[in-house]
Image 1 (cartoon, helix red, strand yellow):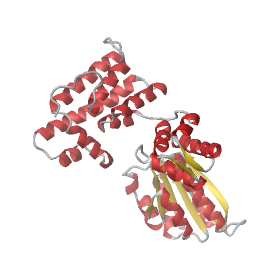
Image 2 (spheres, rainbow, N blue to C red):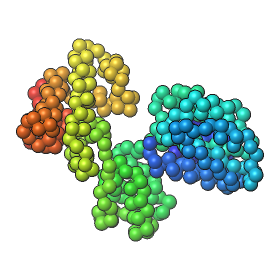
Image 3 (cartoon, rainbow, N blue to C red):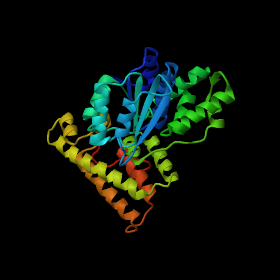
Length: 345
């Protein structure tokens, strides 16, 4: 059974599953989900816990021995497997399948791992754990959902942030959920129950946002020029070098130019996106961006990206960050102080 992290508490109130698989790249959500399972297990009498760190060369026979050995100190116990790369290998896969075929009595298996891609979620061990146990996917909370997450997290403390306050806090900690949780705790302690306005946020919250170059590209594609500039400034502050941003942009622009030509040849948007292997979660953003310009404009933007690459290598004059901002704003459809590129639809 697959459930979301926000559904876990209700599930645990109804009883424990013999197996939990908690995976994903959002560390805070993953930690809190695992803590919730452990807490419910302790309340149910699972007082012994054995932890296995699965690394290269790990002996999976240790897990088999533990699952087949009666506990000497408790009637119920937790076997916790931490697989950082999400790849148990052939030996681990066999052990997990064997465990699920006949779960040991009074034993709860908790598997914690990082992000699992689509191929990993098609493996036998994953499918069995998901089918016979509970799988909890801990994905990052995007900018659109973050204000609601903030309000929900403040609610148990009796704190009611205004819409503007929640949005401001989200903007200052976007991409860094741990910092967001810490700021929420601080705000709740400092202000106590009641209304929370923008002034309180501005007075106590530092700008802890963390971004990556792929967020930058998607922000530009979505047409959000203001957020795009803010991400550029965040990347600069984190010490990201312009060549990495240029590489990500060139990669995206090449694909956009290719897809735009196919659209111009009469192919359907869905067909073009599928052929280019655009992820389902990005199809709406990419599809909207493709409607913004004709193929010739995407080619011109790609040529401009090549020139910025020369700037980053010292082969042409200019300020790489300034050039990148201008290109990104053109990509977003909102050039700053410059005429829009010719051929805009």
